[in-house]
Amino acid sequence: MENTADMLPENTSSVPTASNSVAPPEAAASPFAPRTDLSHLRRYAEAIRGELGKVIVGQHDLAELLLTALFADGHVLLEGVPGVAKTLTAKLLARTLSVPFSRLQFTPDLMPSDVLGTSVFRPQKGEFEFRPGPIFASVVLIDEINRAPAKTQSALFEVMEERQVTQDGTRYPVPAPFVVLATQNPIEQEGTYRLPEAQLDRFLFKLSVGYPTVEEEVAILRGHHTGFGGAPLEAVQAVVSAEDLRQLREQVRCQHVEPKLLEYIARLVGQTRAHKGLYLGASPRASLALLNGAKALAALRGRDFVTPEDIQYLAPVVLRHRIQLTPEHEMEGNTPDDVVKQILQQIEVPR
Image 1 (cartoon, rainbow, N blue to C red):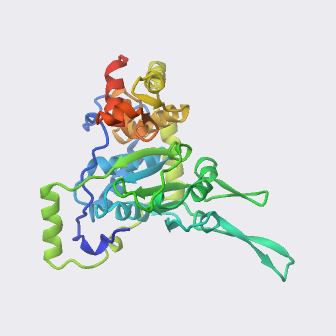
Image 2: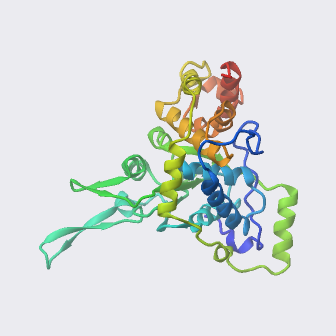
């Protein structure tokens, strides 16, 4: 993975603005007084943003989407070319949480036991003892996830969905909370493997990390030129405990959602299964992801209720990795985001 830590100035980052969604909803606070006290959630969110801001330049949309996934109890796939600090971003977010952290570098020769753990024979006891692998952490960073073959990828299916590992007939729960942050390079094909659709479906969001703006890159260069050379990770402190995060997630789950918005989500996702440009539509898991993500986003925006704009804003990051274009549409230069935009325009918005 690219080494970006020694290239970033203090209070800067090479993480560029991510193009992840349609026009964002209004950032201003809602004029309606919330029926639920969201002040604690917003304070914790601002604390995390503040810690990230010690290293990252801008990237407000990316930070908001990462926080949305965190509060919605979902995994995130970060996609971008080498050098845009995908790994650094994930490590910074992990450092803001007072929970166990581990990092896995996926390679073609990685085996499932290298991820999950293995049983070791103890002669003193005359029995096998399970030795947990690096997946047994609360925040797991998987670097270059698409460099491991399908056999190793399949080892993640159970733990990503059920938060447990089954070894020799015994179930071992992973620590709570449990979040997988994975990175991949969309350009390089040599030595990479296509991720199984069943695994992609287990990621709540797929976020595209692009290049920085000119202004952001100037800030990075200025900081580097003035002598910054230390590790930026040292400046970021943990501000949220495991218990804090559990309570915040419980608050998010209690967000109010109108029945007509549940129907709106179902119609949006259902349209991906009927669209002529797609041969693979989104599963019901996508509907749940859109619902849970919209609840978390609304809470971050200071509202205790979900709006259609929340759903529209998250639709691309929820659906882009869950749908597959037909060869004809792909040859015409269309992208999954284009199809999601078309679907959003076709479905009537409830009011």
